[in-house]
Length: 315
Image 1 (cartoon, one colour):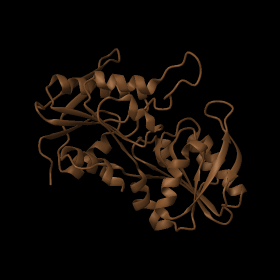
Image 2 (cartoon, one colour):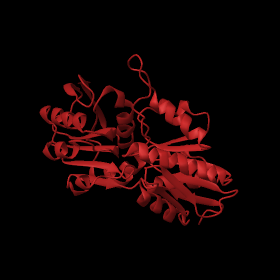
Image 3 (cartoon, rainbow, N blue to C red):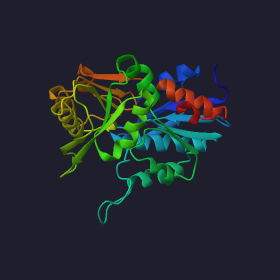
Image 4 (cartoon, rainbow, N blue to C red):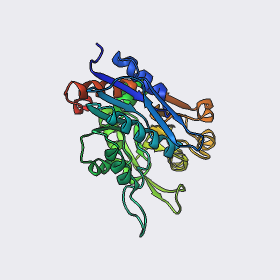
């Protein structure tokens, strides 16, 4: 059943995902023109009446992050000035999330800066998937719905291929809670990689805590950037006797040498979602599988609009 008094818009970051969500909701995609002036400035024009409507802007702040972030902000500003009743920023991938605290003197907290920019642009609600750090929700003084891709991975991939004999592996100490949530759902066991990082985007695996010998291992993470951590974790699991290793990560950023590293690693398969549009190189890689989160986001939008529980999606 189509939603009434709702309009869904998108920029240039991931229009295919927005089309899937609109189709799932039975709502045509809103008409908007997002273009650039010759000097690179972003321009947006809403091509239909949105006065009094609940509007949803589907726009991951993926690469090129600055361009896509500005598109999101300018579209939200245009909707606010067009008298939309509500503006929900649907951000499958929240860029600048890794700088969520000061780790050295005289450094920024960019995830808070992005939060302030979104509110200043007129956003009244935010919907995200698998934040790099959950505390980013606290940077907002507006309603924030934090979704998890766990149901998508479990229902569309893991339950058909793996049993309770599987071991879920966290590639670092910070991801233990995420890996534990998966292991509890599948009734599996848990292992942890003790990782030491010397420089940004480089990691060295030191120890694996847990028993993986002769078992299938699933490495769980929120994102794969340069894939250094992931591939080192896969090698460590194989060194400790794992039978095979696959990986599941919500956001397939896959920058720099990531695809080549995955190709050369012992990973059997890497499963990501379409929260982050893949490069041509990544799409051509036979080891990389993509699952859609359109159904998850569409159901969340439906529940938000109907004032139903969103958290019950995960219970």
